[in-house]
Amino acid sequence: MKRQGYRTGSEWTEADDALLTQLKDQGLTYLQISASFSGRTPRAVEARWRRIEEHARGADADHGRRLEVRRLEKINARFVAALTKVRGRMAA
Image (cartoon, rainbow, N blue to C red; front, side, top):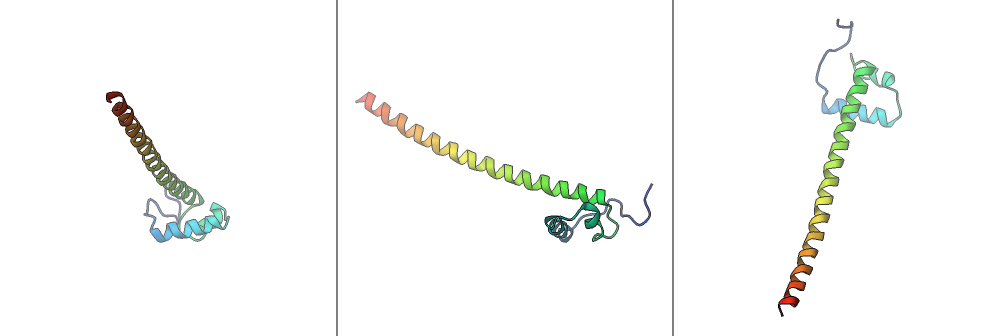
């Protein structure tokens, strides 16, 4: 049942996300933040904040994986160079 005065399933905009992030950074509670969003419950605000955080953590994890791949590629290149050098010495 829809609660009077609350939205159901409406989209969050980039401006909404920016405002939510700003208010959360100020240390406000979800109840206080929800007052800045017409028709958003504290629970809806909290759910959106969790999705924003999950997305940010995912981006950080992707960046970390890319850095690790680059690091391993450099190690591999050094290993191949050393192996080639050793094989050259053994053939001589």
